[in-house]
Image (cartoon, rainbow, N blue to C red; front, side, top):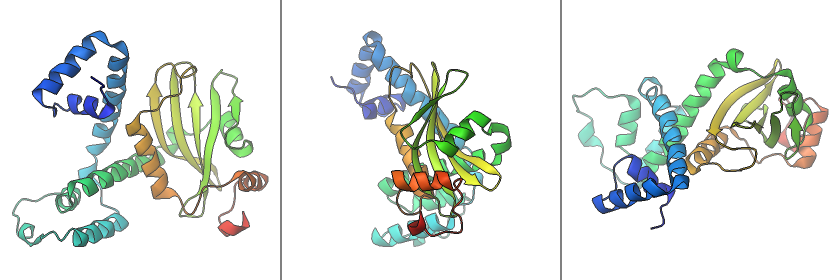
Length: 253
């Protein structure tokens, strides 16, 4: 039986038919690689759970509310029956209840990622950057790997302008036992951390990323980016100008 990540996720949530649950359980008894894959998915699920606990207390962004209303019109859902519901529910629950499941799931990933970004922005002074990492972001093109004094590696992966006119970079910090993908944007005071996604394992010799964490990362970037990612020439110009392009048009990069 070929056990996909979807099957493993279903097993973790106990949502598979009994016969599939038993087959996955038997496979886990003999397949160490499968056990590791399940552990990775479980870590992502825990990350989502920890941040989802804050969703009910977070105001839904206006542009997501508009998106939900548009989707609701397209699906011809009748929501009038819910108007007089005597149970007080949060805006998040009310919003997702009015959208068909596929749309609610996609929007849910985006909102969870947005909450992670909010938390990290509030904790920037605690997380921060070392001078070595900031120097890499300032001077290295995407795809180039820099080695720090502590033996870790820093590799810029993507550069783009956000909707506030700041230039941002996705980059990865890897050591022998961990790998963290981060997104930071350049402000007048320096680089500010906006989001990060952690993975554990043998990361110097391997190059894996779970589907869930990759989707979360993409959701964060989709919510931030304005226009296309910078090409190599645009990155070089950004380096030459210390990544300060708030007052210029994208076409000037």
